[in-house]
Length: 414
Image (cartoon, rainbow, N blue to C red; front, side, top):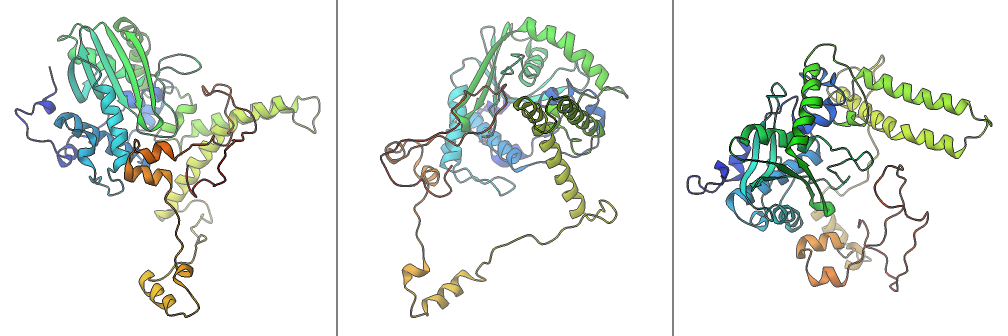
């Protein structure tokens, strides 16, 4: 069985414009938001009627999903679409972009079976109105491979929480939908859940039995969904708030953060030396700093949006003022002509040449070019603070790299 989008005997070559016309609706109880609403049922009704605020990262991810879908339904490699421009005109498929998409394609092509691409699956037998779109489904001999493409390059995404080892719910949610929609056609016994994050060269996999998925749906998903659809559902703020549409106006999040901060201040009041914080005190403070910083950033972004829209924030209201800027030539061509007429200036005075960075070279040459393998190095990054729960290995407090070459890294290079 294959998706109707794949049947090239019936459909012509699928185009990017055709994908843009596909429905793009979302369920308030969908898998992509399941990590939030399973923890905070009250957020479901709170978010009703609020618009989604997109971001550059989200738009780029959507474009990458479109390109990967074009490659799979048309059975062509990613480099076929080099030069394709996103509908928002902010992203273009270049060599590097195509390489990352091909990384995902090569990964999912390893799995056997009938294929479903960007397939909408429903699990309304457990969750009223629950559905989502799974990136890649491949079913063979009782095994269903479910793969989710994550195009972000910031934080690695895992199937299981690195600390608690509990499954994160998005892919199990898709698995539940696959069972409801296709369980009558396939004798699925096991799901292999896969995260593919090409830009971080990151793959994460977990195998889960159908029984485990169904027990989770019965014991956790179904009762939580029933509560979430009722007025007065409980709120439970936490790190999942960063994905909530009401994150910048939710009073429950504000009260929770204030309580967290007061708890830490109370703990610090009990120290033996009231004049100095111990390292344990500092560790306690660090636990809430990231949460507070995230909330402050959300509030600032919301206030900026309100002021830009002409709505008063406070009395007197916050306002927009001119920021700092750098001087620029009114016309490069006219400025160049004028500079060339100055007798004491040489061409080398007017123009400064700099060598392209490895990242820029990779976009032009590709990752596997000999220049990229023979002449590029990646020194260790500067140490960054991370909580004890971070899965990355610890490094020494000071990193130095021994290198025979005296040349400094290219300016602006990662």
